[in-house]
Length: 123
Image 1: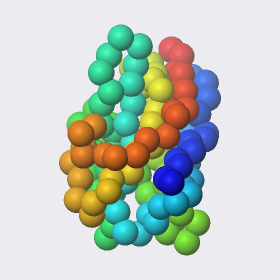
Image 2 (image 1 turned 60 degrees about the vertical axis):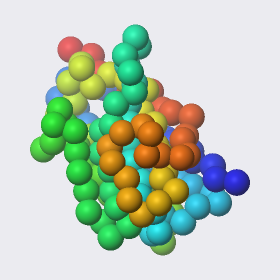
Image 3 (image 1 turned 180 degrees about the horizontal axis):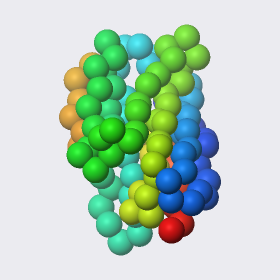
Image 4 (image 1 turned 90 degrees about the horizontal axis):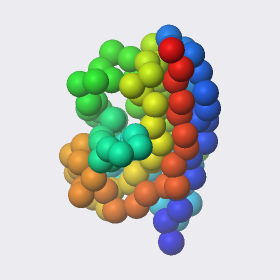
């Protein structure tokens, strides 16, 4: 059974940084596509960043140049480095894992989800 657990969320002021982590059990990061999503109150869940098995990445336009997705296959851990955070980045952030080597930055292509970690950015 695949289990994803996020950590690293918190409260920061605008311009600050946070690093989210996601550890997995029952799943091998090196073999599949992984991603980060977020959901603000009253809004749909949206894709933030994805990373393929070979390390190729893609980002939502809203976070390009500020967020970096990476993974450590040896530790089976996914990361999201978030810099220059803004109040509009406030949301619950979710780690997601696909059941394929292919994925797009949309909810439907991911099969497994963590419980989420809250990120709050104050102005």
